[in-house]
Length: 468
Ligand code: MN
Ligand code: MN
Image: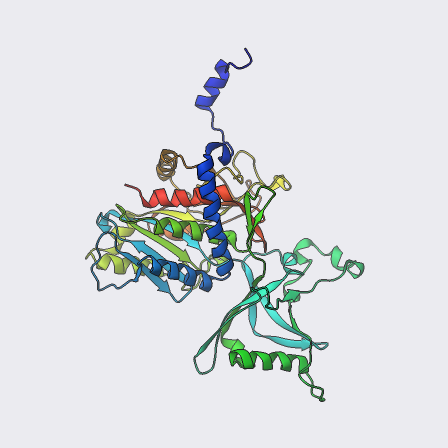
């Protein structure tokens, strides 16, 4: 009788909620599709280390697919594809639907900024005949993780004459890299007594950028002079031009497969470029949707969505107002009927650090795209907390297409917490819920996701845009 399913097992199957490994629920054919999808994803990660580079990558791909710059004085018809570029740091993609905008839109919102080190406004100095850049970290980082790893420099410098120099150095194999030095263990007895958060302090995140003098004569600061001279020759900049620059230090690693089985992707910046890529690819796959599809790829989420390229500004609302204008309707009618997937990552359960999670409600790698009803901290502070009705709708959509999904929370109760852009969209009277990919080592210079989860996220955004 060993093979017979017992009565209680049958009833359990019917009544209990259980999560299986996504690979058990996915055909071999689809696993192949998933793996090839992630090849494109890795190319995107390597080409998009900053928000500006991500916008460029996505806009180029959009234009190739027939997307045109949005013009509020034009009349659009179903199937028309448009984009709106906000200052080169955020981009909105849209495909006009068959239904009137009055019926609302199907919206996704991911962010394309990631934790990093920004150069200070006056960054360059020489100490002990070594040249450095001073930095100010951007977003939540564990500072010690940024020392003794290869780093690259990306960004723009606006010169006094208004022209712009674009810089990217440290990504190609033959380009030099940069690094933050750390103490040798032999002499770190005092440093090792510091707490982990103070182990390396903010003002110790100084970037090593050079060590040879300009000449053999008697001047001081010759190493700094040599660096400045090189930068002047290559980019035409002088030291004061750093005052009007946005220069970002990011890890110089490339995205790669992780594990003997290549089941995962390791890379910098997967929070949240994993949802940026999957939601963009999802809207790119939509041709003539019922509802107008809109995908936002926004900046500044990691510092609280402030600034005019972040979602706490009005740029998205104004875009919708202009789009509504093309059909002669009020923008708030569009917003009030809109449904949104806030496309952001969640913390995957890490068996090495189980204490911060509650196992029944944590998300796991390889259990599919994670739908997070609420984020926030303490008593759900700082979250929009989606309604049961909207959660129910998303659940039906995903189950209907056999998309492997799970629920998740950002750590166990009172372990910490965090937020996403969801609450800024909810404040516009939009129904919104977080949907994204579980990440291991989130916010580290090298984060890990499962390929199957990436693919399920893409499918989830796609089925949402195809909503009838
Ligand atoms: Mn995020
Ligand atoms: Mn984040």
